[in-house]
Image (cartoon, rainbow, N blue to C red; front, side, top):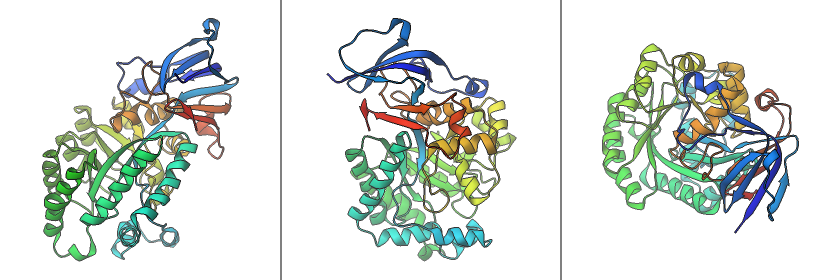
Length: 411
């Protein structure tokens, strides 16, 4: 039996009962905590916790958390960390004034990453992605959703998803995989959209399902990418393989992506820079998690998603990094919390809820992760000595993580 007892915890954050799947509306500002606490981990799970006044005498490994906060590891529910190379030249193009759409029309953006990925072996792709996985672990991430979408043909999409499977097998991260063949239209299909849709529905989806490579299906339903009708066709075919949707929606315009996502019971709809009263009403009547990616809006200088209006209307909100080479080249979740506070005017407590419990819901792992709950996996962050939880988003340039535990083991 592998046991660890964390003692003298300044404050144990995000304590929940097993029935709490998510928090929404005004509840998001409440972050339950226990001061001067202990936490007992046995064989990778949270066994018990309580006040130091009643700390048990156990013969096991002990870790003194004096002056430190302990909270669940981040659940980053939207990333693209399997990619080849980088795209800093496009970063310079953006500085010079080119828009995201203009770069894409010139063969950059997603198509640039697809060309690089095509020329990269599976082993090389895995080694690059493994470094990013190790990086995000050091930043406190314990669960991550990883999308394909830089393949844009059957063989390369499968190559990406096989790399994701290898990461599942070789890292301590909890990983969910999303098939995103509908990420962009390949250059050779510009004059024949229908042929590419058929390749996705009739070739890619059956191949992905045959190897059991994906947990979810995703579509970039937005201006200049895939239409609502095209999205619906892909989702209907994916449903035959029991792939629940997670949709890129409303990043660039009011696209109808939120509505079609809810219609097809999407687990989450992500980006949401363009979200108005109609979209909020649709989400209120659903079980779909609105997921905001504030570093993308920051990096691309986009309109900010209306987080305050969404929360005030009673919605839940999740936060994710969108770690990718073109629009969010970082997986540092603490910085995502900072951007959410600064640009979206979310409270620190709201951001922690959004990046832990609600993030876990947005990737379907909330039964096992996202809160300090007896029986859940021991995926934990131990901070450095800080004054309050608000210091995490406040000190946006500082590394405030002292230790990370995944599956009950120190990293």
